[in-house]
Amino acid sequence: MCYAIPGKVEAIDDKFVTVNYFGERKKALNELADLAVGDYIYAQGGFVIEKISPLEAEDILATWRELFFELQDLDVRLSRVELEKQGMDQKLGHILDKVTAGKDLSREEYIYLLDLEDNSSKQLFYKTANFLRQRYHGNACCVHGIIEISNYCGSNCAYCGIAETVSGLQRYRMSRQEIIETAVEAVEKYGFKALVLQSGEDKGYTAGELAGIIKEIKVRAAVLLFISFGEMEKQELQELYNAGARGLLMRFETSNPQIYRQIHPGAELKDRLQVIRNAAELGYLIVTGGLIGLPGQTRDDILNDIYLAQELSSEMISFGPCIPHPQTPLAQLPLPPEDNILKVLALCRFIDPEKANIVVTTGLETISPNARRKGLLAGANSVMLNVTPLEYRKLYSIYPNRAHESETIAKQIAEIVSLLKSIGRAPTDLGRV
Image 1 (cartoon, helix red, strand yellow):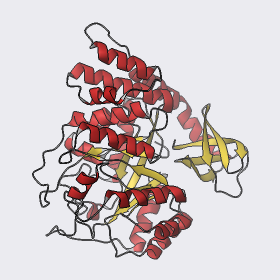
Image 2: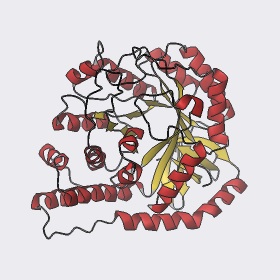
Image 3: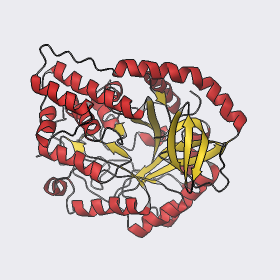
Image 4: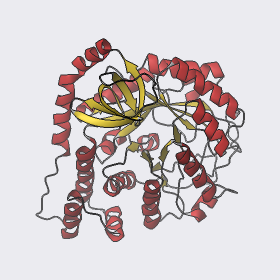
């Protein structure tokens, strides 16, 4: 679990520390040489990020203390499930009783939930997922930032607007200094504690150049860095890990090898999965998941996708709609209904209630203006804000009219903080808010 509220170190056991946040205790991996019991720290994604002075920590905690418990109370009230048995489908009632009792569901029961059509049944499904989220994760919501450093790409994914064959796109590649300054500003000015550096499969940066950028960011800012540069060799991943990267964002997109070949001409699913497994073996936190609405995708495929995300020991799960760009082979593919995505988010929470951190994606926000609220109330507990400079953000056009494409960072922060406060969540990757 990630927190940007400072916590106090209560115990140190080899490389792991126990951190106290308003009475809640979390474990984190420590890579700082001078950490001691009694120190105050920031932690992200299970890593200690930085140590801060007691004076600064106590000042921040004083401003948060009352609000934190007010938000916690609101979250508990909103997540309370009051099952109205009268008129409810008997099978649905049995399934929800099982999952709230901590029992595993069968494959057939999961498929049943994906097939729900009645609106009141779907709402009860989502509310139960939100109840499980609150039970295991409290009211914390991770708010990470993403910097899209380049829209050059050597791949030709059949839906993607920055694919190599897409014509008429103004390509850009941020300079080393631009990337570093953007990341440092996101941390120092806006309070982010976790950032993703993302690009297409751009061979314009060598692994050594990317490692140098990561090292410089880590020297200048205390931040958990994720990378998302497409498929990389294991030695390249090792070089970036040694430089300070600690997370990998890479969707496998589908667990079905035939569908994968259809949307990734000339590529194989097993190769992408091997990259993810290599990264996990090196110690990376894994963010992965799939796309909903792919051609030929079945309910069984979707359930297999969720199982695969769990099998890959994901730190964070990301499922969103397939939104094809109009200049790609899948241009005529219909968008999946909003509820199809919400069902998947809720099902992810049912399948892995205790461990799963689930993202409300920008893709879902693009097809639904109220997606963040709906997703967070259907079991999700993470969002990502776009901190790419505005001059470049509109050019990272993987699909048209992306949500937040022209919004300043300050506006995005104000909106997410307002939303989270309205549903009782603590925004745990932003500083003083």
